[in-house]
Image (tube, rainbow, N blue to C red; front, side, top):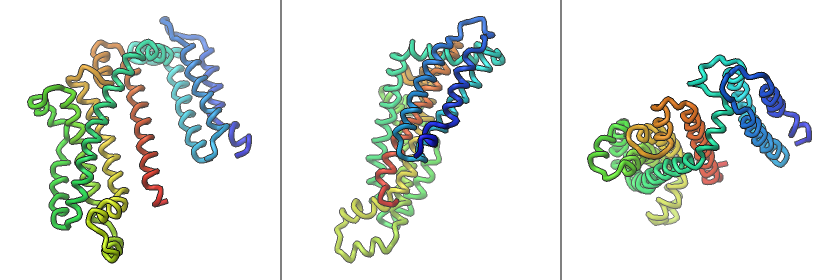
Length: 306
């Protein structure tokens, strides 16, 4: 890419506009913490410049620039409607600077809650993958068993896992184990159904070719059928991951004593909407980061299909 393609972008213009907006007079009587917005935007802009300078992929550079442009545009609108024009109710919609300051003040508490939420997700999600994928492979290998299992998974998978929370609370020792159980159910059925679908739709000529070479059953399942089914399996994994975050946040809001759902619910109950917004932003960021990592893993494992 040329120098102009790398650095003459709308994202940098929006950064300048964002900084100029911070210079406008404030209409809120309370402190709006403008320096925190400037520091945050400057840090993001440094990352954007470095990315544009060293990135080799034009499409990736454009995607990153568009995401940062959206962030700048959101901050501009947020600043104007709160600190500068006082259009929105300050108690419900605090200015961005105050939210960024609160994040810094609560960063230790936020890290603890993030680790709690991510730990629960990983436990339930990985346990579901370990059980659902092999089970789907073995059942899907038999056309008769696979057909029956497909209808059973459709029936049980249609039941929202959150309805099992009362049973989990009654049967399991801690609310954390209840949350892991709910995440397990949210992930198991989509992954199981995806694995079944992938195995049962492997091209017959692929299996016939392996049989001609006298391939054993174990090798057939894990060296031929599993790779051929990965695309469908990942569809189920994506569905399970998305639902897991929604259910975990809901579960943490019901009775947990830690996690980002608890953080958001706890402060919203006390009318502290600055911390509520901090929790929402952090939760969304964590989900985006984990989804990005998952997509990179998926792209790597399916690289042979490209």
